[in-house]
Image (cartoon, rainbow, N blue to C red):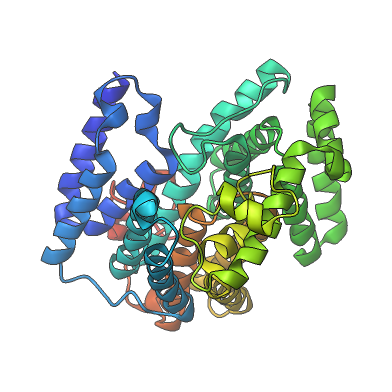
Length: 437
């Protein structure tokens, strides 16, 4: 039954994408982030559903006139340069043939990010992408949160099989980043029941992240909450709210969870932590000898034997920074950082211009909550390998498009669109939505 539902959704979305490519972008994003086909047991599990969605988007792109240049702002320029450099790094790397599959996987995602920037431009599109990104992970977060509560937090929560976030650590970080995106959506809703439902969803996502027993996720959510508190106007109120939520969640977790988190301060006795340190040294030292990087696999015994003080600890970097450094060298790391530094600045621009007109106040909320999500990514990513995952780049897309929307004063020309559960894009036309939001 699950196979039939997933395949039916993909077929319907792909047909719609031929006329409206932006719908295909939503379909691709849903498949790429949530990986719903990985929760089936039949033909859909291994079917090339994402490829079907991508082809439909590209065909629709050829037929539509509603496309623009994707290079709309500096984050996109840096992103394009990063794509070029990753390709050069792969070709000049140690094993181009062996790294081909990973290069192809990353390029598929990045090309669809570029296509998204070509076809998404309206407030409706921005909200649609936000709902798809946050909703895809929120569904998994609800499932994992309920499992954590029912099991007492004893068992770990894992992500979709065969995806970038299959591992408990990466899945937890993705959920941490989802929480502020859900908060943005909650701020736009007026229905009290819907707002309470999103509050429960955020709590379950937090419980699921903690239930993953990921130490990196704990650091990410801590860093995110500190940033949220520091930038809030009512620091006392926000601080009390964080304590009211965090303390019960932490007290609920079992002793085994507490013992694992305590190893953050005793990394020298933890084999996993030493493996990361070994990988970081190997990435740092190899970057001096391979200017283009070694390709998409830097966890090679021969590299650790040459460049790590712990050659027996061959380990994945478990850090977005050292992952990119080891794979693509110092130039690759600088390009990667430039993407998110400029994205952060654009989000800050949205925060500063939130009071421009009432119709654009939601843009300030988006900038603020996207900065919170990026803060969690920056902190948690220091200890987790998630440099190529879609979500951070989708956040970049939303910020870039929103800034262009404000600069063009698009509220003067677009039909009124009030986002909500009854006006989900694709189900109604913008002109039919009632004024609000």
